[in-house]
Image (tube, rainbow, N blue to C red; front, side, top):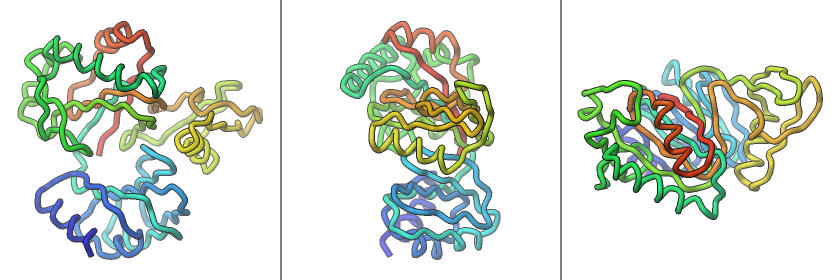
Length: 273
């Protein structure tokens, strides 16, 4: 099938992620070299068997799995077609999002343009776009002053692939994966809990319907927007972010600078594949 051919080609080219269309069962039963599978399902029920859950959602109802054995992938099933999935053949890439918590969708592109122009003027990134990011065709490689954005210099960054920066201007869930299991804290009573079907529904409600994505606390019963629930490791929900691939940790000074530039609050979200 075409999907399988694309997977094999990506593996040969040593790409980390590819986006495909297909039916879950048909594709999974034929994957031979994947070490991680992400399912981005909008209206599907996913049965998780034999796999270790490692992360959650960049879009509605996303589930991540790492296969302990090849056979684990074949045991995943879904009742409907999935919208897309990502086949990951590498597990060593690290990403960070400097996520804007306040930009609305109407001003997202203008905000991104302001951020990009400023980072180019500071020579944190180069102005040219090249093939240096994952999940997108082109991004900006580090500039000679990349250290202005991070806590420490890393000469290896300039030789690392990928090492680029991508600017996001769309309604998005900026998620942490591959770091630790997500813990939620009720903003009303402080009760801590893990992710659940109700949490997934709230995330999907915020993402798909541009609504509040209300989540009710299991202890106090008060329903509050998913954006008000602290996540640990941190997540963010918004319309603007700057994504960095394999950079050293972004500094508080940099986050303060982009906050002052835009007049918005920013949150650092990170993860690894």
